Length: 290
Ligand code: SF4
Ligand code: SF4
Ligand code: SF4
Image (tube, rainbow, N blue to C red):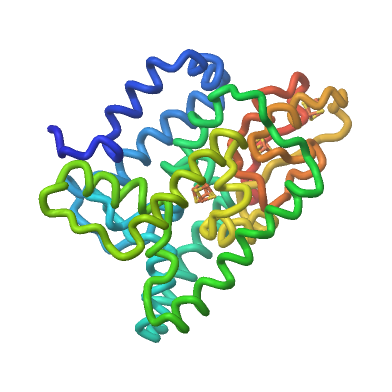
């Protein structure tokens, strides 16, 4: 059934995935096949309000609750409401949700569930001959997302408004644009419409030019989840005795990590590409309780 919302509808994504020239290579390896299925399922669940309604749960990744078929709440939107309404309940609900997801999976929701991460996996395949090497700028720029996360509560408090939401490019892509395109008769651009669209355009330029550029540098939800990678039950394990030092793992890592030496990094989205490309199985996923 067409919901009149192509940007958040799974069908165009499916069409892209089938049509895309690089798709076979991208998802040909064992873990990547499972990851594609997981990303498609979560894309559907994320936008299935026409089945589940609005559930009152919080996404374990970044997605806009104003998106026409959104089933859950955006973690950053909840943070903003917690500050605006001085709501301890919302703060505990948010921290609890992120802590539970993070403690079990670390940042794996970024690699396996987040539709914005999924979109970046595709856009990152557009070849423009551009990838930033592991460099000081790249390393330092990664702290930006923590700064953004830390600033949000103050910005909300001092402006007494949804300061981040007003400018959020994810909201611009998944909520503002669908509303504008499909309900343009009723749509009245909000005060921050132009800046939001400019930020969205810049974000798209960023993610076409740098693999997972939004996740690396700017996503405040990624910044929340990154804290859990060191302690999460799901871990990436490295067996040095099996390692050939071929550095296939570093070459394929979409987060530009210095693999195989950064298995506990908060930047790892647990996508499993390094495992799939390791010739000796020196890398593997492991749940701690095993
Ligand atoms: S860091 Fe990327 S994958 Fe993770 S929540 Fe943010 S947008 Fe999604
Ligand atoms: S280290 Fe491996 S699992 Fe982590 S982001 Fe890089 S390729 Fe993916
Ligand atoms: S791909 Fe495997 S063998 Fe090669 S450097 Fe990485 S861990 Fe070592």
